Amino acid sequence: MRLYIVILILIFSSNLNFASAQAKVSVIFSSDIEPYRQTWEGIKEVFEEEKVSLIYSEFYLERQKPDLIFRQIAEENPDVVFTIGPQSLILAKEKVKNNPVVFSMVLNPEEIINSNITGVSLDIPIKVKLKHIKRILPYVKRIGVIYTSKTIPVYKEMLEECEELGFQLIGKEIRSEKEFKDAFKDISWRIDSFLMIPDTQIYFSQSIKYLLLEGLRKKLPVIGLSSTYTKAGAFVSFEGNYHDIGSQVGEIALRVLGGEKPENIAPARPRTVQFSLNLLVAERMGITIPSDIIKESSEVFGR
Image (cartoon, rainbow, N blue to C red; front, side):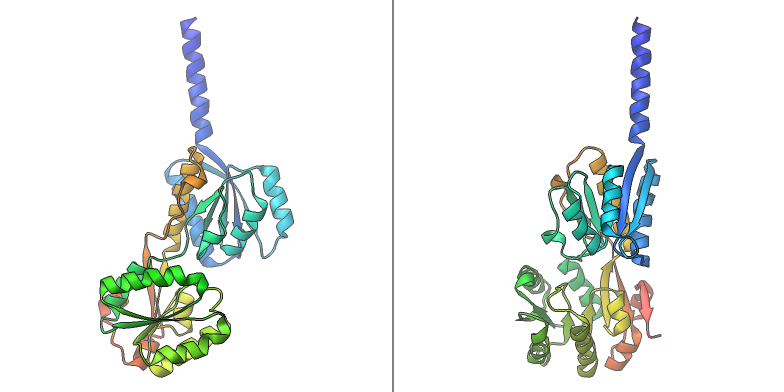
């Protein structure tokens, strides 16, 4: 009788271990771009390292109808839904209620998330950016920023961090993109660099184009939000390492699969920060960049 019980326990334990070594997930891509693919590779690598077999379905918003995507997800009932990019998270908030959602590649996700949602944002801590600015642009003392009521908390955090690190922050609050040009003209003569912050009420194609051209004309280095901005004419941009963001997302997902509730896991920020440089912009502004900093950059434009 005892032997029979021991055998049952062994079989039951074995089944538990086998079950815990598998995870059924759905991943929704906002679009099929390389940074999103890198993030997904980082997620899969974490599961592989932990020897957890992934059974997954991939969905792409730019070529599949959202209603069909979420209908299939509901039918599959995955253990975790991954969203990569902002649009997929916005839709998942609306349509996924009974499954945990782990997001990535989103700026300012606080307004989007629900109790069943957690993940890793694209927001780089202000202090990290300022420390990099101090090293790459040691002459910079006065930083300009334009913000709206939506990003007042970001501006206040910048004020504190700038004071601690010896920068003077010169800011201007506006209500919409339409006021951007006048605001920039108002502060541009008082600053020696300009820092973009994630604010969807300010930055559209026209305001970005104006900022980059005026920054070049006035020899004010613009600090962008990603390598896309650097390529377009920003002097430097800081962003997370996409593969490592995926690793962070994978680690959070494993915690969820282990029984933790998403609402008890605070959204994380990127733990690995990289930067891109535009050497042509640097040359036109008369800025000399040390060779070791150029080597350290993740991407270099305008060689």
